[in-house]
Length: 342
Ligand SMILES: [Zn+2]
Image (cartoon, rainbow, N blue to C red; front, top):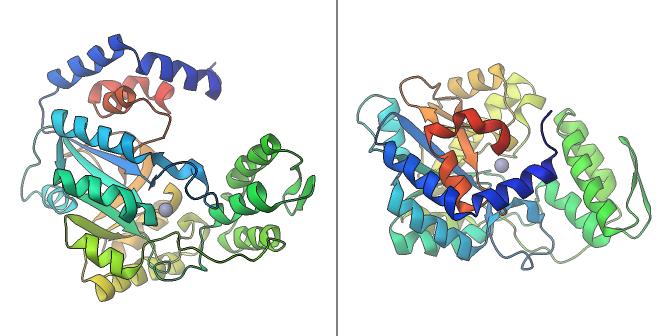
């Protein structure tokens, strides 16, 4: 039987922080000199926990200090590459350097501009930003998980929450956190329109507040794209693509590509599937829309000659994951231990 998540978390933290594991991860890196693999890191937000109390903190991948430290060891042990270089290698036109790593950010949160951008620029490192194109300059458009978080954790006054999915205990901070996690999991199984109906009904009683943008503006996106940041489609409205029809998938991907080109001039043929939810149909429709690369949230590294470019694996960076464990996951030797790292 697999250990429970809290046990795994504690184990990972204590083992990952140890000096012995540091040496082990380093030995694995030295042994791996090949050019066979593409590693892709996924970040969402780079921020301090208490800066935006209206946004779901589970999306914070690292504080600015943590992120700077991670980039420093990435520069020391790996080769950070651009998405353009990855596309060329997948087309067979060039080879990637040994230990190639692509740094990606999903959702284009404003904290990328406020914190991550300078840290990347100071080190001259490229990164790719997956942009849901309906969100820039639209502060009233918010991600459904952030709306739920704000309503449940900041606004909700009652002890019970009645929803179409059942009744939930929201009498204290612990039960609200638990309810949020359960709701997020259950909602992802619903058709997209139903998910939005449930979120709307939960958030309806939320008090109106001045809206602070969560996502970067088009001006900010244009500024970063001039300096080693590649802007890439992340659909238009960020729906769960396996919960909408094939024609809606095609429309979402095409619209996102068109908007990005029109607003910024960027036209790289790639997509990151929102929340990592995709199906064979989604891959097919994205390919028909012109995509040559598709990024999932499936954990792992990609063997360049054997992987499906439309189903590329990534390593998600979590705020509580020790650096040594992230480093270890970037190596082929970590494959047999994926159950522990999941
Ligand atoms: Zn996303």
